Image (cartoon, rainbow, N blue to C red; front, side, top):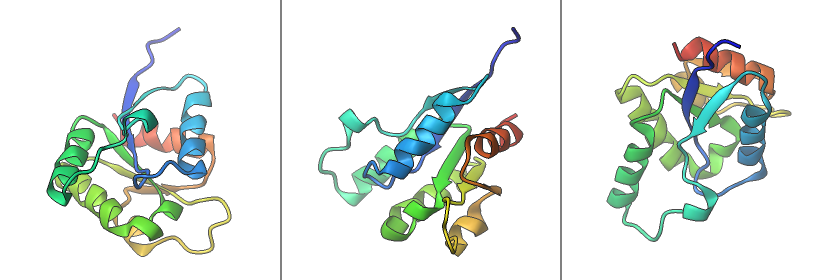
Length: 136
């Protein structure tokens, strides 16, 4: 079997673990011939109370080593300031941004569309194929 590239990904979760975040993780975990490392904060290691500046720096530390930032667009609306920060910081580092259009979503936030290098449908095959295109 050929060597599988390990993709270093940050999946925006907007500081609460929703079913959508967990499902995106399952899509990646269940994908055939796809290796990845999740650089998002583990659920058992959620940031303690921090100032905005401390939280921003903690997010920068998570995003710096990744190869791609993944935004599930439906999570954007309730936490726009932090997701906007994640997208701006990723862009400043030249990291590709993958936007995922949530299943059944009527409208995708314009800022996700504007920042995303690619927008894909809410399914494992589309997400994995886009990551492979965006991460050399």
